[in-house]
Image (cartoon, rainbow, N blue to C red; front, top):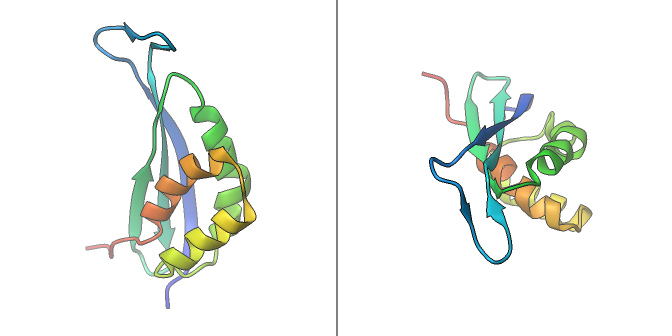
Length: 112
């Protein structure tokens, strides 16, 4: 059974070629939180989410401060259990944004 041994969290901001807006907001950039997860047996996985406009830094902070440390040492094959536990423990809208990249990347693919 492998264990999650390393987590990297970063954010990439992507500007649209043409600025867009609607009645609610202007789309000046897409903030894209990215999570990379490695296991002790060399497998790795990557997941991401995105916001339109702002909020990416809040998602990154939640991943870095809460989700990342909690994932270390866990079995990455137990995706449903991991996601259910975090959804139960963290009842906030930001969790939904953070959950997507973290849960998608907790099933790393074997190196090779």
